[in-house]
Image 1 (tube, one colour):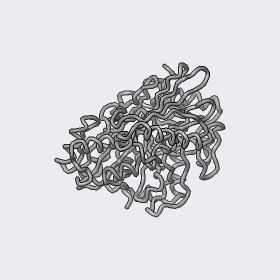
Image 2: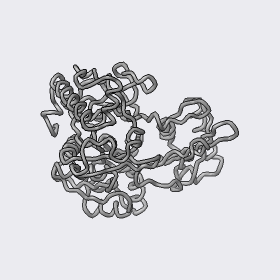
Image 3: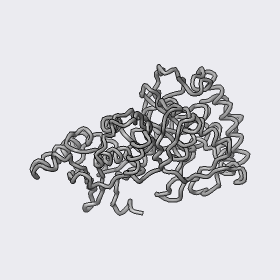
Image 4: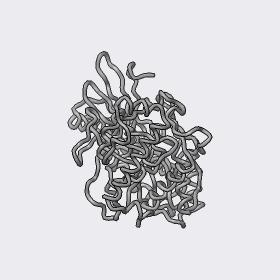
Length: 435
């Protein structure tokens, strides 16, 4: 059952007409109010009048993350600060943070989008929702919080960290829904085991996970360890935060809130649209934001559209789970490697736990990829010969599939640092990668 039948189940011809109207309005809005876009459009000789149908979006220029950093903090904002009611930012771990500004309407629209997500997952008024996303400048905590409030569920705003307390409150307050990063969900499950609490016997039934890439195998691992249904939520700071896309009960792709976001898939090398059903880079355009709408923002996320109709009745297009990012690709001696590929191989191995770290170093003129992965307790308890056998098995598996030689090192269970937020899986120690 959709939360907003008018839009989530809108006939496609009406939806495309609505998107076209909002796209033209947004182009006019930023042309009048954002010098950055006005100059870009003038350089390309384009205006809102040139947008005759939704496919004409390809005439518009792209926006990239460096554009936001170069105009930090408010250079791409379309309203004066006095009209804004909230500011969020990204972490800024790789340079200047990305700013996200909101009018009151933007916050209300954002809350509506998150409410749609929660409703599709099965969250209802009677649920107690333990929100372990970080509150503050990060969009996750408050983004989910306002969606929880919109559907009148009960929020437990614990934020991230204090893992033992997370488990205790989950038990005491009878939490039924957990919101966190998938890596932190695994940390909570481990802590419950250490505390002697069988998390599967608690009322917890549903998990809402996002903010970092996670594979289908990680989903199955979480579901098995916690005894819950694990659902994916997608969003990004540049587009306002979580709530851009969401799974329904069929879990065969994430519906994009198309009345608020116009999505494209392009070839990251040519920047041309890919044929229907092919993978490429996700590009997003804001359709209703007032404070900081972005035109054709290159997300760097790799996915594809799922073309078939969804039995849930929603007409919004679906996208596959993000399979990687163009900017997290590692080039190892000329071979393109995505961390998600390594994760997939590791999770095929029963001998290891879903906790790993990839370390890239230089040895002379060659790159060396070291994979540290925690062994299961049974494997680590065996003699060194058994661990060596497992390491060799993983190395052979990766060599056979990716064509690269790696150094695999099984480490003792519990030795890889656990994440309370986004997991840091890659450490690139090559001199040209250090900042």
